[in-house]
Length: 524
Image 1 (cartoon, one colour):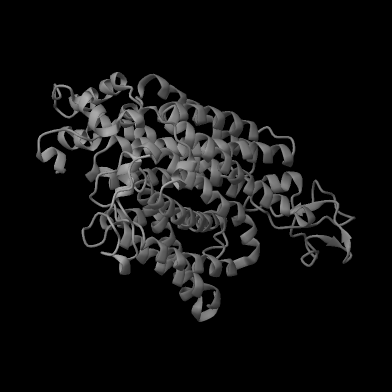
Image 2 (tube, one colour):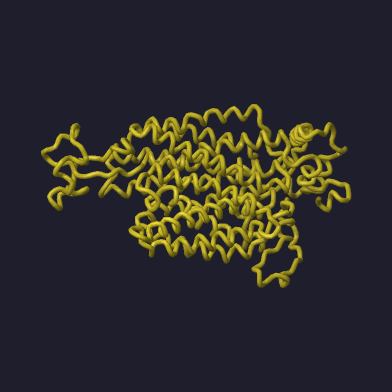
């Protein structure tokens, strides 16, 4: 129990939840509602794996009829994929559609000299993510989690649905860019809403369960794509259509009460807090509960101040934390995206490889759930260990042959590296959000999501390097393990509400422990 509660008074919003219920029925209901969108944002991003899959192809020979010819016609096994007669560029192509019947690559012939367009389209939503993270991260802390979510869902529904009707690769790329703008608004508002609804002892659970919903979305993606493999437009339409249902959230979901209190909108916060209390078996809270929160938790200067991502860099401790987290997000997000785009080192069947990758994530989440709250491990140590394992496996993998007697060694290194990176990324999402105070949590989380897309933008191009791209990410993972050791362990502590509270928590490398001053820097 917190110190503030030992004295009988409520000083922070966490104190309210500790006293009246950290994860009651009403909180669970709202949490599940705001976790469901992860199913569909994952479809929007990773559905590209099948909508934009590159099919095996060859040149159409002059004597062949495009409407009847087969990719593997007898006697044509050695026909070039890009040239006729050695140096003449193909005007038409024949595609192998036995496994996957249709994709944007086939429709617009994005092969050979136009192959780079695939990487551009694959990177376009990540570029949009950069812009969307800045826009919606600021909006999330300014206009609230709920309305940021509704605005983002509307934009995603329109742009994703329009992708199914795109008449050219360029239009499709622009629409995918807009899809990328919308997704961070949804993910940020949902993740932060989930964390702010629950008490300190339930934050780990809340921070991890949303990833199960994302995995459900990825498994649903491969299932739908496998069954609708001959019409990419229909597939894209199916990915987009359920999004309209989330607009109904306007009528029956609340705004984050923690955010409302931080903005001085105490009457609105009181309604939601009373619902939480009632669902947890409390008819009446103590008198002047909201007034106590308003007085002790925020202060007038915090209620009227509007923050931007620049505030993440204005104070010493917060600046160092933010820079380290920026690096971690870039490294882990880039490899996570490559891992889902390319499973060739696991299986030659794209559906099977994708399924193995996603299914293997589920035990990772269970493992993380039971370790990062253990007193002997926690978030920080778990992250350091997993990053070290991931880095070692990724660096070693390219130098082990995937053929003959060493196949299973190569497969194991790839799989262990992938699982360790997945677990690290899962912990990072929770760990990084806990590094920021309430007044900057939405901006901080969204800004890290935004920065991470620098790595995701480069990921499709890194695929062109083959398996040796693993070495680069392996080195990045080892550097990340060292940097994580500088950050503060957040297991079991109350989330800081103000920048002043955050600055009191000073990070240090293990060898610097005890040397750091605990002097407060003052509020800003």
